[in-house]
Length: 87
Image 1 (tube, rainbow, N blue to C red):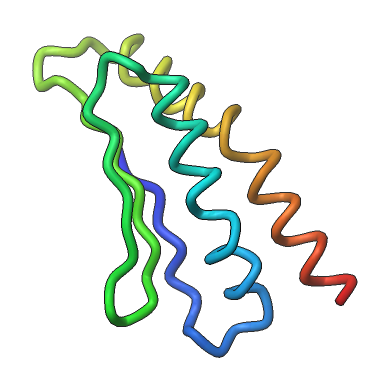
Image 2: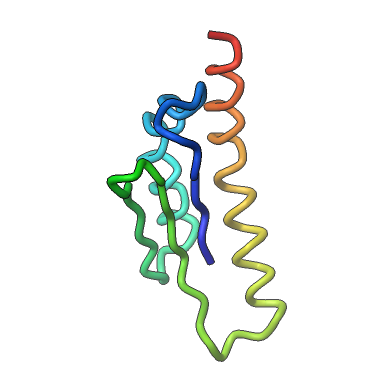
C-alpha cells in the first residue's frame, strides 16, 4: 500500500508536504509497528510511503491497513494543505 505526493517541486504546497513528510512517516510507523513501513523522497521530488500488505491478507485486513493509513496521515496532510493555502 503506497502513499505518494507527486506534486512538482515548484507546486505551492510542496514545501509544506516536504516539511511534514517525516511526521507522516512516523505516524505510519507507529500505527503499524509490526510492518516494515518505509518512506523517502526521489530526486524528482516525489515523496513516497510504503506500508507492506501480506499477499495472504484477506480483504478485511487490507481495508484495515488502508483505513489506518488514511486515519493516521490525513490530519497531517490537511495541516500541510491548510497552512500552505493560507501562506
